[in-house]
Image (tube, rainbow, N blue to C red; front, side, top):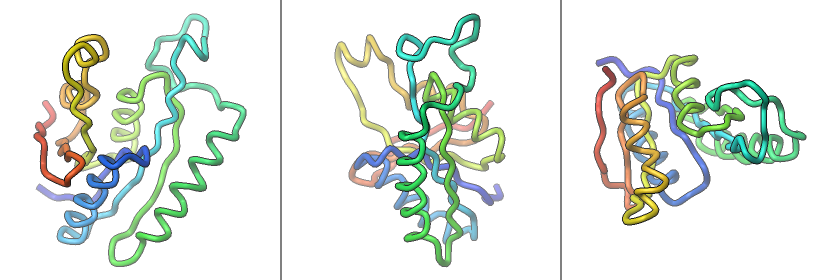
Length: 158
């Protein structure tokens, strides 16, 4: 397997930081690029778009949230850029999983490295697991990392 582009969804959480650390190690070893991604999630009920599927890319928000995300990810990318080339992307989607899947296809990413929170009980039943949905939808192999930087599982694309 050749790894040239690693996609790392990043939301400033402890889990995302752990996944980024793992991705940077992989990228250094394989001479790959790291692509940081922030998906600005605007749920359909908060941002209705008549007659469009929930997976549709959302129109630009008022820009403040996007500019803040671009500034934050840009600073992180500049700080990390060195032996490993780091790029960043900000996109707005009604569904975070759809956003990650779409950007992974557009790059195209060779692997997605993401943090996992591990909901349980009623929250897991009602909301599902983003990681589980990503495993089913990812167009490439996915590596999930918990907050301590340990591998939490993963799967290959179909």
